[in-house]
Image (tube, rainbow, N blue to C red; front, side, top):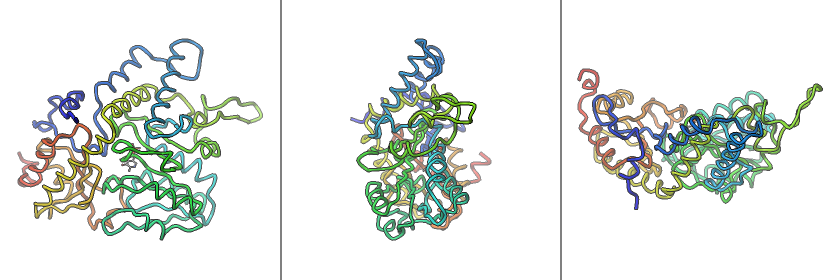
Length: 409
Ligand SMILES: Cc1ncc(COP(=O)(O)O)c(C=O)c1O
């Protein structure tokens, strides 16, 4: 059974935390998530008891750290069903996507090749490819969304051609919450000679993602959106692809040797992509976070998110003043506006009642044309969000009073 009270007890940020004098209701989980005590403890333990570098010596402390890094790599591989040597530690999803664009895109794309993206993408999955386009002459095209904002395999089939070399999409949009059928996307991409890059920032924390069985070429995600620390994330890449790429950054730890003849021999993947000292406390925290998620069960987390999201939509739908942009959302994200109220004003009003949501463009700035509005409000749930949180949110949206209350109360 999903014991929400037991889960909530493990989060210090949920203990008597107030905002604007009210009990905090945190509904900005698509941005970042709270950390359970076990993650905080794992990071503290690193600094209090385990502090050492990795890959650089022969004493016990360091050897133990090496072991921990390997254990975390193994756990990540198990979590997304990949091999251990396909897991690269990065600083987060954005860094992972930049790494792919730079190390794969710049090496293998040429003038006239095509990169397929969607209008719903986050800046982190657009701008690295814009750079590749500018530097190689590859052309960027957008797979159209259907009328509900869903990125369908049908539309991928219409947009793809033998010029397409890369298809790069978010498995779950951070604004619309729709889920892309990545297995079908991989099949269609491969049939046309392209690789599939999956931005898993909003999927990996919330649903079971199967790198191997879905035949994904590259998968990226951030630790901080799944109860882990900031500054740590992963790039999962098919081993032969990782091996074919050159390192994005170079330095200590990633090379076997280098000489005065300006030659360097890198280690094999994944280590060749991990120049410099790793974020070791982050790795300890990420390991604890994944253990925590696996303990609860990612399927259960997904079910919880979907139930809360459907509940919120069913309530908001009854309010004539509310426009919902993603009524079919299946991932704990509800994007809406209150008629006649600018999104940021609505978010400010909710803040005055202790409710944290996000307003604006959510880093998906070209989606606004599709949505027909310059800004939206987004509420997003996670494994510790309670029905009471949603009720407080609904009550504030529907009966919240005048926006000026937020400024003058
Ligand atoms: C879909 C998507 N991609 C990429 C990112 C970037 O993640 P990070 O800032 O952790 O690198 C986000 C963050 O919100 C996101 O939602």
